[in-house]
Length: 586
Image (cartoon, rainbow, N blue to C red; front, side, top):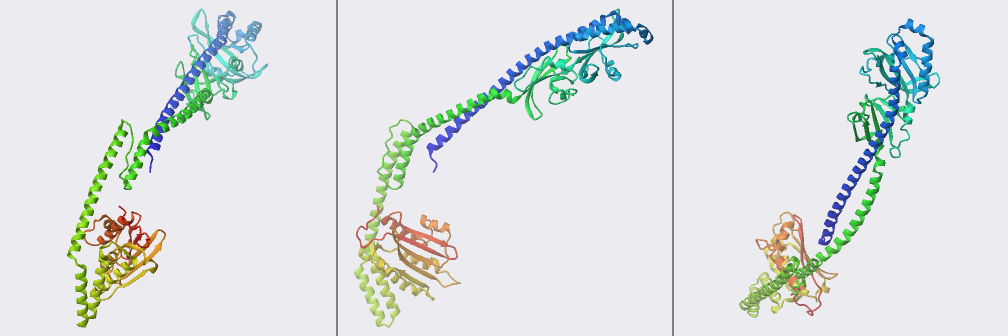
């Protein structure tokens, strides 16, 4: 049976645990969000600082391009055709040395190149090959408003430096006196590794990193050179970085959950992207989570203790009331509950006391009335039956049948006389096992006359039990029930009844077994519930009630039956030698 105390403990613990877990989960979630926001804001500030540093770099590159544009010699040579350039010879060489010195002054500049529309090809540093296709690819993309474009990173080989990772800046060379006239193209090659030095020592957490892309989605600079040349503008992991001025979002990159933060430069040419693994971001939140788990566990333990004490306080009077109710159920009507409370439990206790007092009064009234009625019925019956007159009359009939040579009739009359004598038992309810067996045998002598084919009836009662005292009329009603309702309707087999009596631990066990028609569980229940509409089972219920009245609820009648196969009726009574101590159990 479920305990109210443990149910209260369970329910309240679940509720408190749910609240603690919900609060802990919400706290952990907002802690993570706060750390995420703080990290993203910090990363944006870092990216802004990198942008300022890069403005110095690219500002220096623009200054060089402006120097080239403003150089009169460059503009002059750009207007010359190939024949005129060949005649310039030494002057171009001197200009090349001047530009070489300018290149050397900026560690990140690899070369300054000018390509005139009429044939000028001027470079400040020797290269193994001038990639004409590369120039043609970007020639038509260069804005005419004087701004510049940056190429994706590519490889180029220099005579002094060997193979380098290069970012080229393209800008139109125009005539200062006529800005609508283009003279050529300026290309300044920048060393990507030198650009990377500007920010490579900046760490985002322990393993976070920063890289730079152009507005078209190409990676310009990255600490991992294997990532260079890649286009990420359409990559789901980074596409959002090119959609606004600044921001952050969460993505899975190469199997890792990361926080991506981006910032676009003011001239819209560069996008700075920072990537931080989420496990680093959540490290602080994890510490908070572990502390929260400890708090929740401690809270649960304290809640369990408090709820247990409170539940015990609440349920103790209810348990007390329940124990007293069990005593009432067992027949003890003298119990009273002492609960001095002014709440619902106190009201329940007072109602219980009132109920038991009324119930006791009603039971006493019903019991006394029932005993009085039974006693009156018995006296009325005995008043109608004069035993001596009945015995004398049956004796006269017996001798008359002998004189008339009717021995069968005499046998029946003799059995009937004995049946009445043992049944009435001088008005005593108590008899012996021996007399009960004799009474049964007399009944069977009379019943055998009714059958064309006598059923097989065996009486096997241990003679050692003959001296034991029992209440009268417990076997005959059961055998009568077996004869009339068990084997009377058999057609395919001969009826058999076996009556046994044996001692068992705790008393005497009588069994009446037949091979009759049997019955189902529903019919058995109806017999004990007193719901049978005919006389079948009435004697069984009567025997059961009388045994329980005298000896207690642990004794009585049990029925075991299989429909179509037969029935076994068990009768359990205590073993009592003589009549000492044999009283009713009221």
